[in-house]
Image (cartoon, rainbow, N blue to C red; front, side, top):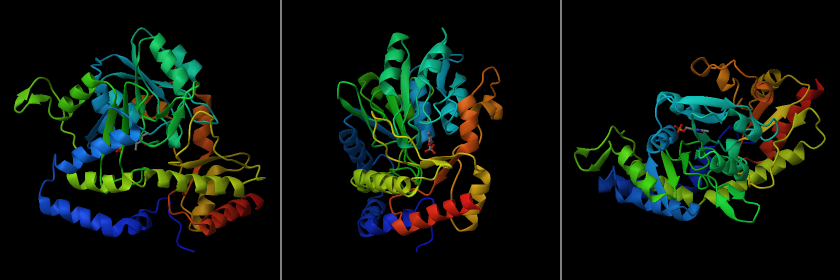
Length: 373
Ligand SMILES: *Cc1c(COP(=O)(O)O)cnc(C)c1O
């Protein structure tokens, strides 16, 4: 059995190595490292894949969120509602721009922002909602979009963990994660479902004006070279990363499939194990399993993690602390019962495109062994 890894990029890349090496060398020899043709080609190919009008590549997923908030023209003091159970970047960018992050509790099974609580968090200062398609499954977008429309709020979808996931509306219409709100953002961090070999990110929108604005903001606020209309930032994807992403984008659906196969196999191996709750699937979204996150029931999660680690099985806690308990985002004004519970009971098992059935069998046997102790 190969050693078990949380994410196995070496093996994934080994299948693409000749193509990757050739392409990377081509870019190196072209010397067009910034704003080269590869970046434009990648943007157009991703637009086609997502069926969205505009893709704007940028430096990373955190920048993508920042550019989105800036393009919407939000002002200091405006409130932006997001989930209390997410990676810090989502709330960080809201706070960085001196907007007020308003955190909302999540559903204990789907990890998704609670729509009822979201609505009760809306005030006259609320300007935007940032749903996070956590772990690879879409938020309840239909309800969320209706709510946003009713209260005239912008929607920015944080799609860093869910690129390629499909959302199915009640009328049967299907849309890719990140293309339903005003703006979608994603990350190409190496371990994400579509990862490059360094940092990278992108923004999606169907709105021509926002697209134009996003490109200007990402390029120092300049609409014409050396003419700066407002304070922007410098955020770009480089050509080598774009070249790598073009190759890997062609395999994204196959990667999603491999992750689903692995997830279903975990589920199958865990049938009848009452101390473990496998990740819930919702009907109106596909799941791309950025993470396979289970919950423990009646056994100590931290002890299980230590036990698995001792047997060479990496596993991780996403996320151990609710955002409202992190120093910069402190909020004791409300209870976040579900987030608190999840931070105590979630555990992410190894999940990637190269997971072997033998490895999965070993992992689940060790979980059963721990429970039987
Ligand atoms: C990874 C991630 C980000 C940030 O992406 P970077 O490319 O690391 O800046 C933002 N939001 C979520 C939900 C993420 O998982």
